Amino acid sequence: GAGVSQTPSNKVTEKGKYVELRCDPISGHTALYWYRQSLGQGPEFLIYFQGTGAADDSGLPNDRFFAVRPEGSVSTLKIQRTERGDSAVYLCASSLLPGAATEAFFGQGTRLTVV
Amino acid sequence: GQQLNQSPQSMFIQEGEDVSMNCTSSSIFNTWLWYKQDPGEGPVLLIALYKAGELTSNGRLTAQFGITRKDSFLNISASIPSDVGIYFCAGRGTGNQFYFGTGTSLTVIP
Image 1 (cartoon, rainbow over the protein chains, first blue to last red):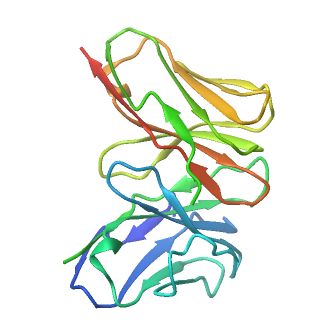
Image 2 (image 1 turned 45 degrees about the horizontal axis):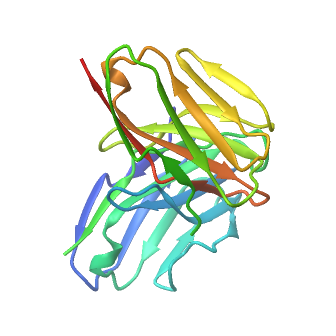
């Protein structure tokens, strides 16, 4: 597609439920990033993929969060046993290559609300 | 996670005025990016900087990569109402993840 696509755009779930958030990066982009943005804050890094593998998952807050990218394109961020504190906008970005001289382009985000 | 310090936190300016905002970090970065975010949207890339001392323009926007590699600034000349939004800096070090600033909220008064 022309840009990074994220689905759903909004998700409301009950505390304790499991959710999956999907990111479809720009075609041909090998690097994919997940960020979380709370109200009034800048995006906070969660995890970065290079191809199919998670090259850096140091930003995942705890083991309830997990992400996959099985074919090196679409990625899914999975959150188990959701808590109210997980409510935020989850942003996905992709770039053509990792490393220097590359730019990351963002999707419109998924707004997750845990009630 | 690491966040960069951005200032000012918010700005209210008259249409036509110039704007300057900056971003500082305790860490050295190899890349600086500047993004604009409108409500309900993802950040949109404005300018990318790759070398210390680099000065890059994109229309009315000008950004510089500080020579210490720990700071960057963004200038907007002759502001217009559609410049309203939140501006974020982002830096990348030796890893490949980007760390974002705390944001500068810009309001342009017609």
